[in-house]
Image (cartoon, rainbow over the protein chains, first blue to last red):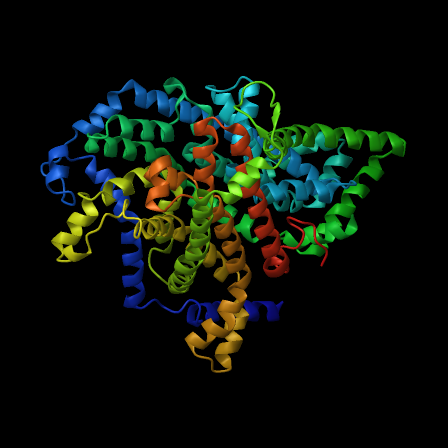
Length: 291
Length: 340
């Protein structure tokens, strides 16, 4: 007991004086600031550019708005096209998230807590999916979706996105589900709960942090996805925001300010989601990558 | 079976001992309640597995595995995508691909992107992670901010950067204003520069991910090692070089793997910024933009599928080689189920 206490004390001290956490010098702050500036400058260019007029942009491409214009943003915000695309993106994102979470947790539960022949192969099957982003499958995938009659239909985007979201989900969720103590399952079973009952009543609530990570990743992935909608959705009324941004920027290629306003409004939801759940996402991503 | 389980437990964050207990326990759990005969319990277990895993497997196989198999089949046909493919051309599509100088160009560009991504992002990201892994005010806000480029979509990145980089755009204007007018350039259309422009945009978008990954890797290194080294009189930089970097190895190797695979499949940014036709004249075309331009966009689905197969095989071979020789200790079994 005492030794443990001593050791903890010693560790605490070493954290405060340790090399890893040595106090940052001004140089470190300078580097951090420069790095952040580099990361944010192009984003700021888009956001601030939306507050300028086209003549301002043409005359002085790298200047601040003078005076600030709100018309571009207002025009985008009252356009029905923008909101329709926001709606389509939201539907695709939410449906993808729901599908990935429900199906992914179910299959991860099997992989984590059932003992059966072929479990390793099943895990390897999903893990292999991690290596292949949509690019290699997109051409036949488009043909498949066309054969199913789902082109120009959000379902044609949602189903493949669920499928491509499953590998990450499995990789993140399996360790989570494995970590649920066996005693809880035994207790539940003694109390007469079936394993499926245990799944719904205990597993889902206990694995909620993992579920949130997986869900946010799926949502942001779907919100930003470009290649799949590009192939599947050709009808303007089914466009998601990324397609909308591109269509808008070629349609109004001379109206740079409006394009910038449209672009910056379309990135807001992903940024909000990310900043709210940053810890979970980063933890989930690094966990998945480090395995 | 047991060997694959062993391999699997290695990639879990749980110590393997734990996993075994859990796995073994699952069997035990059913036996106290198991008044019913074993076979019935087995059947029930099989049914549960089918109900829980079935939907995911069907969707995954249907939309991920099946398309790859379909691509292999369609790749042997000259086919416009209507009706069943009938015009069997054997390996003709592949011969065209391998003799087409446009594809050679695209492959070369992919190779350049793979190497430059590693060289440009890796060292910088490691140094940034080492610097940021100190007691620093506002660590969490810094983590959020450097991740912003990674979170916003490729379309937004592409649209924003292409507007900034236009000949009469903000970058050239800025260079002029700070007295570097000599460095003004046609960033997007000059074939000598365009690939570097692309690399800068790629680095900007993805370096935050590398830094975050390395920071997480650094935080998992046990504190005791630093203490021991410090007691032995090692300096800060000695510790970083002899202890931190080697222990960060697994994270760096996995990052490099993800970066390589991503570079080989690069599509969105190039397609958005350069469009399908300009990419080849500006010298930024990739295998994926070649596939889309010569497959779907020109209605040659057989050919497009053949290109997809080529990209698939190239990625797979590189992934397997990398896994075999570099990642082996880090994630044995995750992808190939290789024994140790």
